[in-house]
Length: 476
Image (cartoon, rainbow, N blue to C red):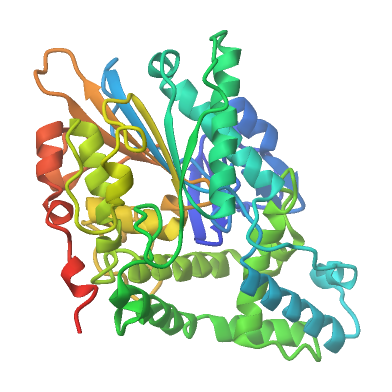
């Protein structure tokens, strides 16, 4: 078994890969950026390319790409899947507009202050900042095409006869990701020698903006968006943890680069540039920025990102799970075939129409953002067993009970929601996989295969059914 470090702009994690996927290298640990897409072992072996002392597990990103995390639970024997819903983050992108400006400023500052770059820093002599802002990269587009192919292949029996109902939150990179996903799904269907006259599939785009109800994008809850303490819990937890490891990195960089005068913010920018410049490559070529930091520093950077998600949008924020309640209530409606019952973020106009919110479909696709998916997972109670995360001490994924930003919401990260009909069972079951890892579903006392009966699953979602803590959103 080979062990790799998976670095994502949401974090870095240690990942075990089967020996047949190992590639000889002088480095015992490799930086594996969330560029993972695990369509097949053949694809993975092709993309596990040695770059200096790195091995690139190319399969998708969060600030690094998608990567498939094997499940520890068993698989049911030949279940009949009657329903499949995927909730996906968009593919790999350029930094946001504000971040790309900040990263460029750090690079220009460095080039102005440092006279000579040598050793592992020598690439900076000729490095030019060319990253754009907010848009999908070519790598990100391919991630989503691969995701559509994977969805078709996984649910082939349903996919042969059905066209997915697709929604996307309104930001351009999200809509484009949905198009790329549909392209991959269509490609797989044609390769399967199936007629696909429905392509190009309609994509329902739900606008993002103030006052517009959208279950795929948080923006309505005033106290969460702008109020104290909710809006700053995540960033405060991150700042405390940064103080435990970032000063040493900054000091080392400044010692290695005389005259640089880098600040803590500059150091974080350097860390961020590893994944972003990696996914800027059409083939996900590992960036030399990644070589500037140690394995231990990448672990801490990963945990720093995890704290931001957990306390910003997840269980660590009293209003985090509430932002995902609307989607959970839509999922209940789809699984049960009953009208949506929600008073939070559901768009009643759209969801009251069988055209814009059809029930009784076999396949559904929703494309969203990492923060929103974090809230949705929290509203579902998927990581309820995770104890409150320490903001002063690095915790392993064993200690966090499998919770990590990198494991849950990398670029093109996805959750599958399945309804299963099993032989000898009167009632259908529900199973959830996050990046191919079966979630135990402890809130409804899931069995050893990670399944709950549909009725028990719905019953366990009382937090969402009751509206979460939506009443606090507009309290004065």
